Structures are given as structure tokens and as C-alpha cells.
Image 1 (cartoon, helix red, strand yellow):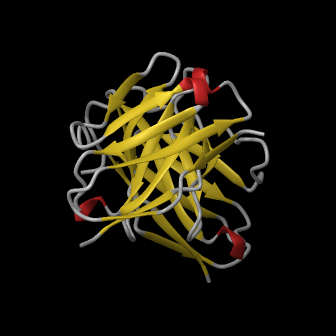
Image 2 (tube, each protein chain N blue to C red; image 1 turned 90 degrees about the horizontal axis):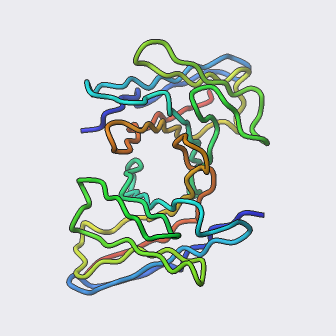
Length: 109
Length: 120
């Protein structure tokens, strides 16, 4: 059972802001501030989008931002575009183990 | 330019052994941890384990401990994932990924993936 829970799917229209959540369910999480987010389009390797909860790697669009409140981390995509359609995974380091969330399929209507 | 280039697709029979590889370039290979991640058909990502090529310090996910072996040869900038006896349930895409250099924990570069198919 994953220690990180993500909704299976989220959808939105172009131009909307979409927020994806990642809830840490394990009770003995350690440094869960090491949350990162990955985008995976079909047939491709995952791509780092956000790290350390809020930091954005060079080359990633400013439309992508990260935040955290309590035990839930969030990825927000502002002005969503068709090209953002993908599966998004969160990752966290907890209790000497690394856990991915189950992934959220983002559909751009 | 940092690159992780993985070995090609494999088709194996149950019970066979296999080793796949991940070659790093464009950075100091021995100084960054390399992780292996499994993605079963139509499923999500699973962290399998991680190795520090500089001293071969290796950590495994409890789910994969004893099921696979992770190794590295820093002289040729290559990490490996191997099985001694494959099962049909090992059919998946396997990715290698470089862990960040700092005290944080994220994977900044990924290999292109290796598809392993186990079928009789």
C-alpha cells in the first residue's frame, strides 16, 4: 500500500488552473518535505517538474508550482494546456523508504 | 549534457537470468546515487532500490529485497539491475534515475527505460 495517496484522475479545460493533491498517509513519515513531482506522457520516461515541495528545475514552465499544507502536497498548473495532459506522480522520502504516489491522470478537455 | 542511456528491450523465458544496464555520461558518475524504478504494464511507478557507485552502498525497497540485485561499475560509469530467475510478473519497463546531489531526495535525470518481457 502506497504511503502517498493521489486522486486517480483530474480534468479541466484549457486555460483553467488545476491542482493535483498528494496526501501522505503513513503515520511515521519523516522528512516529508522532500516531495517532488514528475510528469509522464505515454511512452516516455518521467520528467521532474517540482522538487523540495516548491522548487522548479530550470526549463520547467512557470505555470507549474508546488505547495504543501499539513500532510498534503499539491501541484498546481496555471493556464492548463493540451500539452500538459499526462500522468503526474508525487514522490516522497519517508522512514528510509522512497514512495511514489499512485499517479493522477490529467485530462485536458 | 547529463544522460542516462539504458540497454535495449529484452524478451526472456521464465526461470532465465537477466542483467540490464544504465550508462551515465556528462557528470561525475561515481558521486551520484542511481535508482531503479519499475513500471508494470498500465501501472504506476515503484521504487526498487538505489546504489552509490562510488562505494557500491546499496539500499533496497522491502518489496524488492532478495528479488533483484543492484550493482555498479564506476570504471565504466554503468549501473546494473539483475535477476537470477525471472518470473512472468517481472514483465515491466525499468527506469534508472539519478538522485539529486544535495541532501534532498528527488530524481533529476532519467534513463529512457528498458522493457523486459517474460513469457513462455
